[in-house]
Image 1 (tube, helix red, strand yellow):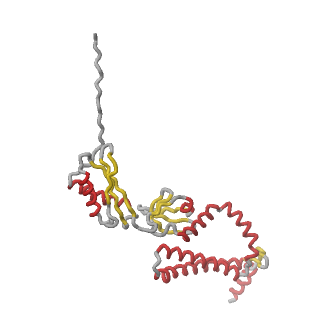
Image 2: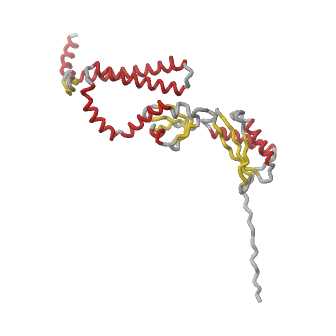
Length: 291
């Protein structure tokens, strides 16, 4: 006990030494430590509250998963802001005394952290308007993949190769975004096919429709359809159009499945896929009379 008393007497002047005077509040080392502990508690509490709201309340509603995630995020941020405000009040820091300092710091941060602030505001817009949501298949800035996580500064997109790419939130607001899953999970795929000029076009249509109908990931409704697109240089150009709501995250996998079926049907009906052809005409030059 004597040791603790001596230690307390030794640390008291250090912990209570005035560092900065903020209006009526004197900032000391003990005050800073207390404030940091309160801030850490706020972070933990907001995480627990957000998880409780998501798992115990929102999960019982009929809202989709992406909307539940967005609401829980906003609740967490609200709890954090209120918690930081209460923490400052508990240690006796008057926020009005920080207004001038905050204004000066804000001007400096506005120039130095412009991109971060831009991404922060864009993150709030994404969570509020939900142009993209967790699980959506998107393409933005040459990056294609599934949205795995949305934070205030950036969004994590996971490609089909299981590579996580961090995309700044500002890109979702300032550039064009292709959202394959927005509003409706069904996506139409257009698969081009070329056949020989000697082929029976009606038999080709039949083979393509059978190929689509036998593919388990192709929807029966809307029904697949075939379009005779053009008379190509070396082939008759067709296009089969199919709908799917299961392989939107893996478009090449669906196209591969349909192509395998097309190849089987073409072999069954003896439909040829042509090689490029060129016709060459040789023009005879007139022979000059030696006389």
